[in-house]
Length: 274
Image 1 (cartoon, one colour):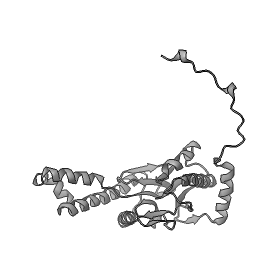
Image 2: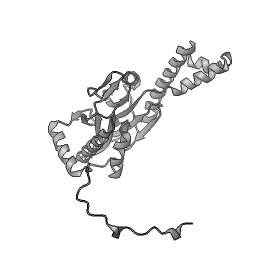
Image 3: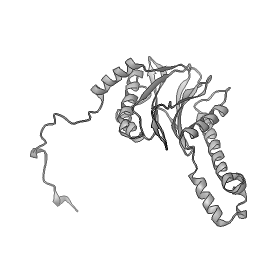
């Protein structure tokens, strides 16, 4: 239950990353709007994750990243995808191994290398269960890679199947993705947009996605700076964004539409049918 967005942009020629998410979470007992989706993975170098999925699974994969992200050395455009991907794959492999051990009491590696020891039905059943194992969480990892002259934004999506995608402009995860993404694409957003336009665009997309039942109506928008500073939009800022949404956002009702009369319709050309 969630929606998280991250987008790279510019402020007076300097790089920024805007983060946006709701606060909704759910369980078998119900739902609440008290779940912060932002997690610090590392400080100095500074890496943040926006999270979606089951709370226990999120905490587990976040702990893995906190433990295994390098504290020294730089993550750059050439190695970032590999570093983030290896950690996700390692975590997924551990979950698959836990599944096998809980079923038959041996490691995943032993099961794969000693298949002949297990009845065919056991193999089929267990491989089916292994195939259904995933991270039960997805992340948008954001930060600034090292460079010769400056640090540049990196937005890395870690999917539930542990696949990795680097997004040069923006990334979206969560159940509201299908509603939140089209407005961003429609306006041809890219990482050269200004900070103020980017903040508005993410707010608009998040607000529109609230028609999805699992997306909460509480919103957090933060600006992440290359030095690790994080600034949050305040109440005055949200009031400004609400006013802008009324002016620039899509209207919920169609009004003042003139009559669409017969002069706009022609007979269907049946003779053109083959």
